[in-house]
Every structure is written in structure tokens, then in C-alpha cells.
Length: 417
Image (cartoon, rainbow, N blue to C red; front, side):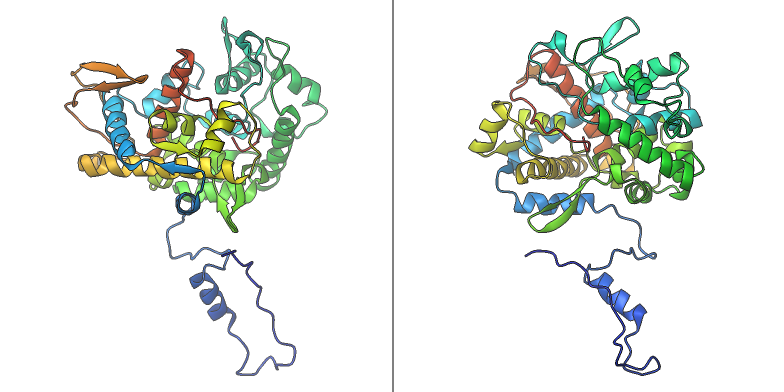
């Protein structure tokens, strides 16, 4: 049934303002909240992003994307064991050579810029050598890493690409300067260049006019709540408001807003600018790589028409039922994987919020369908949807490099992911 738009209560002009028949606005607001018609959040309740709730709704009403319960449970155990073996943790984030190594406000600026522009890197070029890439530190970087490399290269060239004051100064931060920042090592330019420029300008205006020119002030306003920060980001910045309508209901997916909070948490190892008491409210980040990986693991299944469409490398329209089902179901699938791990290994719940993992001695491994299987490790440590997402993404990229993909990723050109 379509979700009706909330109606703003209006005073009946025929009723005297002092009449006992006048509706109490506070009671009306409570009624609206009870019915789910209010845009306001009850201040007495902990903040919620509603991403997981909306993902379950999408899964429950999906037609062309489904989950295989048995394979999902099997995948959960495989994922847990591999993450234990590989000591997968927040530390893994900082270990990559391109990610920032400092832990200060300049790093916050870098991460905000990075996730502000973290979308749509896939190429239609069949020849990999012709795809958009960034030349930096003696090698070519593609995909997400091309963005990080471009930002690092710009900073090396003394271009203040992570400074909001610079973005809004169109005399210094011209489109030509930005084209130089994202110059490619090939003839193919970075996708959606105009949209990226628009994101920078818009975010710069908001940060400079409302948050003193620093995203660190947004973090302070969230009061150590990951959910509050996600909501603040999506309310303040239009280009982070990753919402659409599915089956008559407005749903939130919030990929980039959530990964921004997750990157802060991972970079700062759950401390300082990355300290959030409710980090587990962050879901998986709905993009095109995780659905691909979940299909590879046998967790997600597509209808024949959708699967044929994806294998034919045909584009899928942003906001279409296919695209929303792929994204929403993948969020819900990772949640089920997390729950299955917690069910089988309840000790992970008490292992701390930082998701710290340590190496285990057992190294008995084998590979099946491009995914390793290992024997039971000796220790368990904390786990959440963020770390599962990071792990699945890294694993899928490795399988791609090894040409072990069982299905291509779906192709949607969008600023949302």
C-alpha cells in the first residue's frame, strides 16, 4: 500500500483560538510519531538511520532478487573464519599505502573529501589499459583507489583539494584546476566529472556557512553517535541523501554517508574523531561490488531476466526496482551474515567495539570457487557489518584481478555509489 504523505495539521479557522475543541499540537505530533507520519525523531529514543529497516522492507517485497538461506549461513562461517585468519580489523584500513597515516583534523578533511567523491568508477572500456586511471607513486591506480591517489597527488602538488574554503573559491578552484587534479593516465576521463565538481561546491557552501568550514564540527554535533552523524550528513548535504521510492515507500540506502562514518571509525580505530558508541548501527554499504560478491558466494540469486541483463553488461537505471532490490537485499544479506556469526560465535558480541582481530596460528587452507576455506581458528574477536563489507569488497577486488569473477557487477551510473 502506498505510503501517504503526512498532512500538516492546520487550525480550523471557524474554531475560536480559546476553544476547548482546538487540537493540541503536542498530542497531534505524538499521534503522528506513533503512526510513523512525523519527520521528527523522538528525542527520548536513540537515533536511528532506518537503513536496515528499509533494507528489510526492500528484501520482503523484492521480485527479482532473492537470498539462499543455506548458502548465506555457510558463507557466514567462511567469512568469519577468513577474517579471523587474516587478522581483519580497523588496522587493515590504515595499512593501505594510499590511506592517510596521520590522525588529526587534516585526516578528517581528507576522509570527508574522499567519501564526498566516492562514486562511479567503473568503465565501459573493455581494454583495461584504456580505462580511467591515476598515475601516482610509480603505478597506475583504478577504481576507488584512483580517487585516493588523485587526492594524495594533488596534496603533493600543494593543491588544497581537501579544504572546503578552496572548493567555494571559484577563482582559485576552477574547473580547469579540478580537471588537472583528476587528470587520467589514459584518454578516458574520470566519470561524472561535472557531478563531482557540483558535490564539492555544494558541500563547501554547507561546511563554510553552517559548520565553520570544517567537517570536524559536524562530528562534534553528533555527540559520539554514528546514527546521529549519518542523519546529520544526509539532512545537511543533498549529495549524500541517497533515498528513493520502492513499492510506494520512500527508502534510505545512504551508502556514502555511512561509509564516511565507517572510514572515520576505521581510520581512528574507534577513538578521537572515530569514537562512536553505536557504530553497530551502520550497515553494509550498498554499491555494486558487494552484491557481486554475495552472488559469487551463492547467497544472492537473481531472476533469469535480471541475471541475463547483468551478464550482458547492460546498464540498470538508478532508482529502478532492479537496482533498489540489488542494493537493499545486499544490505539485508550482510545483516543476516552478521547475525549468523553472532549466533554461532556469541563471544564476538563481547569482544569490544573496535573490531580488533589478532592472527591465529592455524593455517590449514583450501580454495573453492575462488573463496578460501580454513579450519576453525583458535580465537574470536569483534565483528560488525562494516568490517564484513570491507572484507567482502577487498576479496571481490582480488577475485577480479585474478579473473575469478562468476558474474560481472551490475552497471548503474550514479552519484550514490
